[in-house]
View 1 (cartoon, helix red, strand yellow):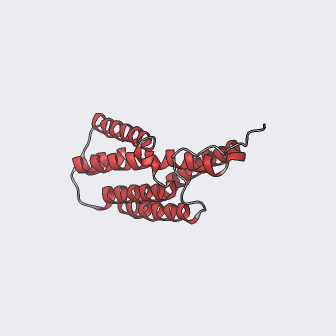
View 2: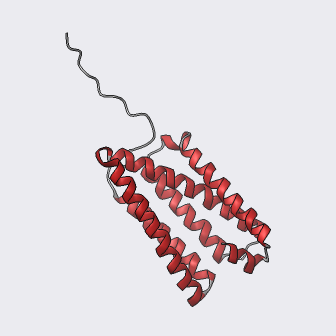
Length: 172
């Protein structure tokens, strides 16, 4: 994102640092939002929606003729929606795999790292082949793909709402 802001908007290193700061604050805000009212919603549709919104924000950043301040706004949207998706995924996985939470979380962390590595490699190739517009198209395609994977799974009603404890019959 830093190179893009320098190329497209002529931002200095300090200005690019502020863009990253905004993205980080918004990521935290999105994470916290899941602990509030958003967490009461079914998690699969919430994750899928946040993934699509992330893809739209990134695609808009790279594909539309926008100003620098609108670009910062799109990075803010991307930060919030990414935060929502990250926390929601962790909650969903821990709810759907109670017996193997540690293994599931380790695999999820590994898959996320592989995704970052693969995305970085594909992003570099995209920049070499077709400049920033291909990054925008690729982000949208991958966000739609990830939303589809999330919606494909079972138990769409899982949310952060408290799960009632099973009643234990009293022994008299």
